[in-house]
Image 1 (cartoon, rainbow, N blue to C red):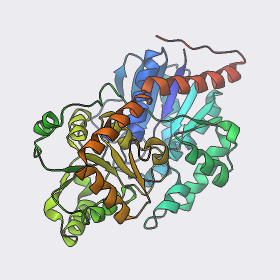
Image 2 (image 1 turned 60 degrees about the vertical axis):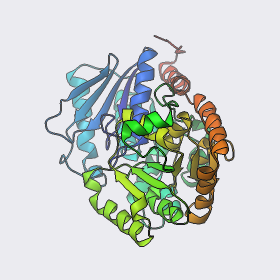
Image 3 (image 1 turned 90 degrees about the vertical axis):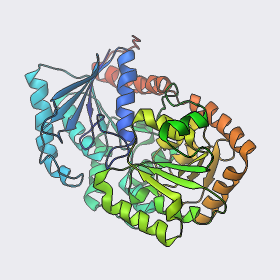
Image 4 (image 1 turned 180 degrees about the vertical axis):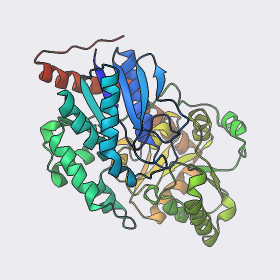
Length: 409
C-alpha cells in the first residue's frame, strides 16, 4: 500500500467539469483516487483554496481526501497563481508536518503542480510522477489566436528534466515531449485516461430527451466542454451553417463567468444565420451528462488540440458516434470509420460532411454507436489504475531499494 500526495494547484477535483479551468484533469484525479482507494492505497489531493467558506479537508472516500491550501487571493486566475506556488508549497509542508504524515510518492497534474511536486518530492525524498494534461508547445502549434507564455514553456522544461516519470495519455504527447522538451523516452509511460462505463452507458434516446427537456424528434449535435477558444466551438458553428434540413446544436458548458465568450459565440451563430438552431446551457452535472450524451445523435469534438479527449470517450461509452478533429489524443480515442470520424482541424466543410452523413443515416449511426461502446469498454478506470499502480510500485520500489507488490482491497 502506498500513501500518495497528489498536487493539483489550479483546479480541484471538487469543481464541476466544464467550467473555466475544470475539465478532464479534474475527472482524472477524482476517478484515479477512487480506483486507488479500492486497491488499498491512500491519497491526499492538495489544491488551492478558492472559497473562504469551504473546509480545509474534504473526504471523497475512506482513503481519499482533498486538502485546500491557502495560496494567494481566492479569485486569482490561473496565470496569476504561478506567483504563489512557493506559498502553496509551504502550506503543503506545514499540513504534512502538523499531521505527522509521510508520503511514498508525489503525483502532480499540470506544469504548475509539477513545479511544486518536484520540490515536495525532493523535500520528502520520494519519487515524482507528473502528468501535464496539456503542453504549451502543443497549444501554440494548434491555436494561432492565443499564445502560451514563454515562462510556462520554461517551467514545463524544468519539470520534465526533474521528473522521475512522466505519464502521457497518448503516443502523440510522448513524441512531443521527446522532440520538443528533450524528455527521455525511457522515462515516459503512455497510459490512456479512463471512463466510467458503468455510469456512462447507453439508455433510450426518448427517455434521455424527456429527462432533459429536449425535442423528441429534432436531430441533435452535442458539444460538451469548457467555453474557450481551444475547444473549437467556432468551427462547429461554421460547420453547422453548411448543414441542410433540421438540426440543433446543443452546447453544454461554462457558467456565469463565461459571459463574454458566450456572447461572442451567440453573435457568430447570428452572423452565420443559425442562431435559432443553437442552444447554450451551463455545464451539467455528471448525472445529467449521462442524459445529454444519450439524447444526442452525434457528439462533436472540434478542438484545436486535446491531449486525450475525455468527452469523446464518454459519448462513445453511451453508444454515441463522435466527429472529432484529427489532433492529439483524439487520434487514439476516436477510431475513424469505426466509432465515428476524424477530420482535419480548423476545417468546417469536412466537419459538416461527416455530421450530415451521421444525421441522415440512422443505420450507420447505430452501427458506429455500437462499436463506440465496445471500444469504450476497453478504457475502464480499473484497467487504467492497474497501469498507474504499476508505475507507482516501480518508482517506490526503486527509492526503497525493495520490490513493492500490488495490494488489492
